[in-house]
Image (cartoon, rainbow, N blue to C red; front, side, top):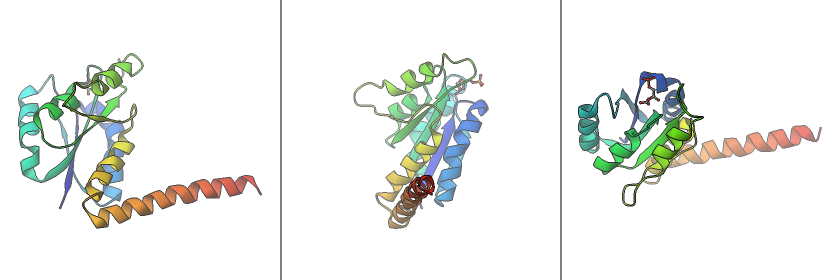
Length: 161
Ligand code: RP5
């Protein structure tokens, strides 16, 4: 069974990252959650990045704020796809620090960066990656998108009443 690792640089990122955990659980995908700080626990960062793929993890979602080096450093050492969530931390310069430090990766070392505080989309993207090779998960994504469509149609119809 595929598993997604949701990691973050600090416990202060948890309110944002909880959205990734929640949507993954709604798709019935196994989630491993941990705090891995690129700057405060560098040894743990190395250990996590070099070994995640040997522990049944298929995708890594990494959220961090400020000088947000966590997603990029995981991507530098792991063969797994890494989705980066820029977190708008309390002392951030409007979140631009987080966005740019996760987005602007060098050639050869991609991080799939979602929107500022976009942990929910990170969870959906991780589910889609798993779904590309897992029909059950794929069907849950199809059902989810159908619900999105129905909500828009319902809202549209409510305007015409
Ligand atoms: C980053 O610094 C974390 O990802 C967090 O977004 C930010 C602030 O961390 P704390 O000082 O709240 O632990 O490393």
